[in-house]
Length: 230
Ligand code: SAM
Image 1 (cartoon, rainbow, N blue to C red):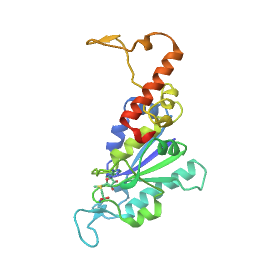
Image 2 (image 1 turned 135 degrees about the vertical axis):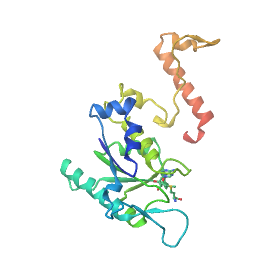
Image 3 (image 1 turned 60 degrees about the vertical axis):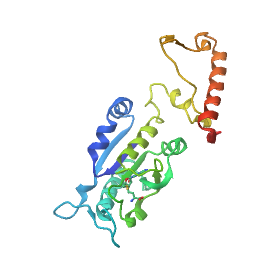
Image 4 (image 1 turned 90 degrees about the vertical axis):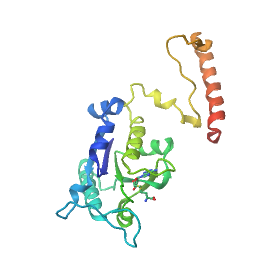
């Protein structure tokens, strides 16, 4: 799976994702990540990519042309590599989109290529969004300064679902939100920490009993913390 991020701050995306599990997945070629600088597609001599909003109001708006040219260069490259004329999915990170969740991550993880478009300032000229965006996605009901952190959140989540990225693919299958539940509590050594003991059943070696206990705890936790999932 290959991620292509259109952004004014490519180093933020590359630095942010190039560590730990996702960093290793990039280095081993399980996933691909490129960050394309929208500013490289500015056509004026000051490399300006934003301007004042028509109709007035606060802030600046990213212009349509450099965004379109950046998209076009990536889309053309994808169609050559993937030998297809199918248009790639383009996710625009926006507080006005559907709120991201595990189900969306599973759906997006089936794509070979995904383009993420990161806005900044007051956002992006609506005309280019109408032309290229297939999915409008928010990471929650709050406003950030740019789409880079949301894109990183989504890429991290989706990458974990790509085969071979996690050491054990079962990790993703039995986690929170699988089957609309939160995961059961986890413990590791030592058996006792500041007077608090690991639940007896986890030390019993009885796998059926452990599975039963985990199932109960998972349900209890979901009822307490996220009843909306049930
Ligand atoms: N003026 C826009 C509005 O009111 O909807 C907000 C623009 S925001 C300051 C700048 C950029 O940050 C957006 O274009 C988007 O790419 C990104 N962004 C901000 N909050 C986000 C969120 N909750 N989810 C996804 N992207 C977000």
